[in-house]
Length: 335
Image (tube, rainbow, N blue to C red; front, side, top):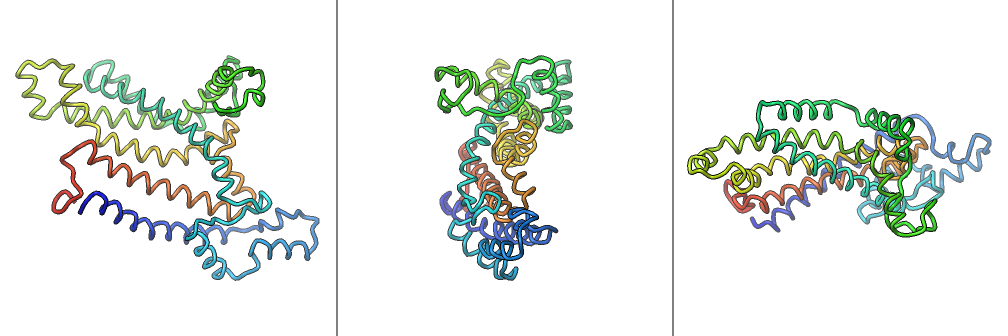
């Protein structure tokens, strides 16, 4: 099987996974108490207004009819319309909020990867000494600490007491200077955007940094104990050359797995981070949808996250072969 054939097969395998996600989410959402139509029209609305709104959004149909219709719509890329936002397409709201969350994810992972990989390598190189112990303790604390607690602590220290960084909101780097308070140029916008990104990025990136550091250290230690590394040392190859040429690349497959999974699951962490810092991204959109019991919006965001997750896993699998030529998606053992 070629790489293209492997990708095609994996894409076909995504279909039943997404069908399962849609079915379970649809059943659970329609099982919770409450009525989104009553939330929309308000407590003073009469029965006729309630029934009209229910018919407008298709909620007057039996559950199985709504399920079949929703599956047919999703198959064409239509996630329906939002009740809370007055009939706006769910996909429109997703793509409106998505750039904010992507910016937050990009900044947090830039911080996490840029910190974790050197820290993991340094810890492996200095195994069982003070630097290694410090890296391990730091990773343990990062993995064990809830992200929302980290965010609240950062707000208290750097925003409330220190008054150094803004505690809420997010400015996009490409925003019009006229729409940003105190900005008169593109540079002012970039500085303001960076200052708003610092605390949320640290909050969301702490867990990712800790997880990647632990895997980087373990993977580097495993590679540094391989026979070919010991042989290189016996021939007098410097430790720096061994780390750069022999060890680093061969140690990155487990790290790549963790980074790929963390990138997809970090969307869930963004929900808490965006709530703590009052950022209008995908996380805030999900919270709004749940509070308003907006069935279509909940379904749409859930399916979108599921698609991102399964595609992220597929990309990681394909990147294996790019990093390590020994991995093949042909026949036999490499399949």
